[in-house]
Image (cartoon, rainbow, N blue to C red; front, top):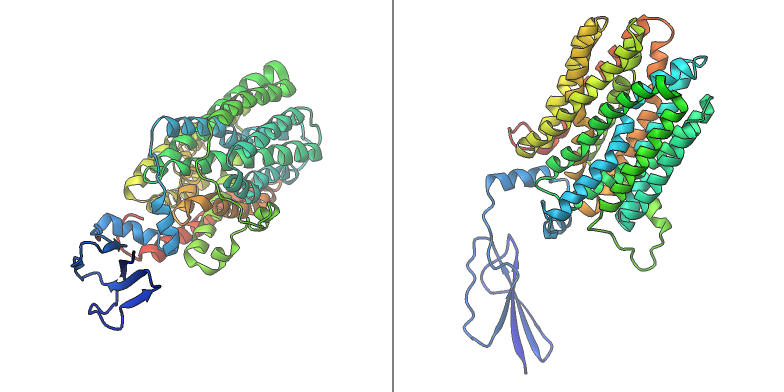
Length: 497
């Protein structure tokens, strides 16, 4: 039995009178009539009841101002990207989503916690184990760690996208445990580079990428808040681990202190492996080899062709560069001013302690006022604090504590909000790849950050001021790129972005 199917296709500039714009396709059994429909046109009800009508657009919903703002900030995505993102159903909460956040929190207690503890480890190792090495040589140990921890996303991100969370979480957990056990027995620079820099760094990249990326599978509207909750683990770890190190070093020595840290890390990572579960994975096309995952892991083309992606990437790279130098040398700077090792530890702990609020409060504000808006404010505050407080008043212990607390609060958003900003210009299923690409470049910057800082410091006391000026200046350049990113998205409009 022959049937008629009428299709109404949306065409913004269509001619609404049935004429040459109507297309009839007949195969002898089915009559298909395609009629372009404009936004202001009215769909006519078919006269024949037996006629089957399929409407591709039954109604058009009026876009409110908030939706328009959301469309503006996601303008770097293609139409297909936006539609596929809209089709995904995000739980935005519930038991499973909350358990994933808890698992990510446990994983980032180690992942981000180690990042926030390297300054304390570096200060102790420099004075007690590698006392004959130069500041630059010791800096290479931790810069290699930072390179793999951040730059490792170039392989960890795509592996997560295609395989899910389990495999990279298992690999990362084993590497971190083995690397920390090996670090306990290190006595030379090259041993530290291999054990802590390479093994722990690579393991950290798997854990960090999984724990951050998996949250985006469960949250969209509340993504900044969810990631903020997870990333507070970094500041909590940055408080707990230094306090443990400070307490255990004089009691049981360096070797067993690091072994205890390794076993505690294994326990927390085991919990993370249980609860961190993915929802979305990309499927390999027919004939698509697994090795192609790594070949396609770099999303360099958007970085070079899209101004928004370029400016955002440079902004993140420079922000992380400054944060790494400032946070890592904070304890060593305090020691160089003549204060005790205990005070140097407390300065770092104070920074991380306030950073707990700094990772959550800005993210809550960002959900309301926009991620990039909040980042502009935070980076501006960091630049002012470095040049206006640390540089002129760093010789005073009281001012150092004040700086550590304020800098810890505002700089914490660099860890917690930059993944959200990256996700703002990415499809959910490609988040791991794009995040990995950006942080691969961050890793390259971090590879040279500590040696550069060490070279600026040198052997003179004035070298510390040179390092502070350098950090503040690069932070100011970073601010320019954050502002440029916002301008490219919305111009000078005062909107949520």
